Image (tube, rainbow, N blue to C red; front, side, top):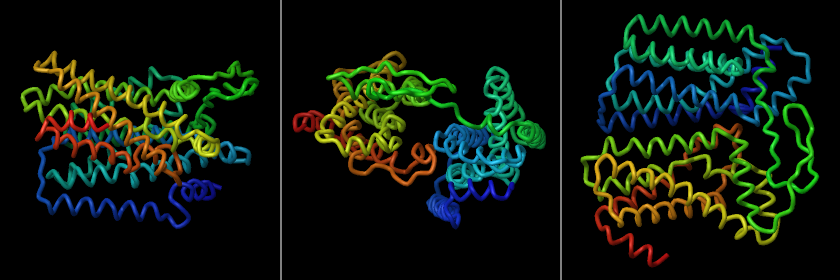
Length: 407
């Protein structure tokens, strides 16, 4: 039975012949060799290396556990008689292998290629990955006790920073992994089913939806104007992690001037705008909702009705982050001009236009769980274009007014 559950999840995540793992390992090897042969070296302290590996792995693992697609798949499996412990072990193992080999392995390949690390630090990084997988799964199963889970996570991070790099850290990670595994063995498989969102996204009047096992009548009425805006805000309100990612980008906007305050403003300001365009969740709303995409493409006149409000929505989100960045820069370093505000509007608009064009003409399809969308390589296309544009603007600032006039 345990082997059957493992095959069910692993083939869903990796394909029939596990081709995703093979492809990911090949990509990691190419990235590592390319950066290593480029002779790029960056000094990374062991504690920072461990923190990056732990936080990234835990974040991806949490996204995988929170996947609505996985929840629907699990409900079908739960209809069969299952061994509780075997189900939990197989499910966590499948998601752990997915997280480590398809996501964290790429990050670790980059970090090890551009920095010089000893065998002890490599071993510590591997233990950090394993610990993050088991601990995140254990915390997810106990998420209703969020206060205790928060203290537990803070304690582990403090231990990583305090112990540094040595046998003490390895002992802490090993002990915490054993504790996490023990909690997982005692967990119930039903605790891993993500709770239903239960929000009607602009559905017709009288639509019945479900919230926590209870059926409710929708009070959504017909609107002649602003339909897409209501849909976008309802969708984001039902996915709190999307707002969380936006809040993180605002925090990044506040922190960037701490590192760039003494650098040439005509170069760093456009680069900051390009970095702040990397708000992945709001740029994949069409890809992550196949039902919406089918409706938009099927109904007449939806190209304008959908794309224009969606472009304006992304523009406003990016513009808020850009102006927070300018305000923080003015407070910490000063020297913000009206021309920089014009650049903020220009870069926010270009990011919105490029993102909507990608979603309309090249939506992401064939994804298995939502984490594939968040970490798809396509997310770097728009920031990459804006970085090239930032270099051009830094070299010739008047290009902003010329391009703005053409648009």
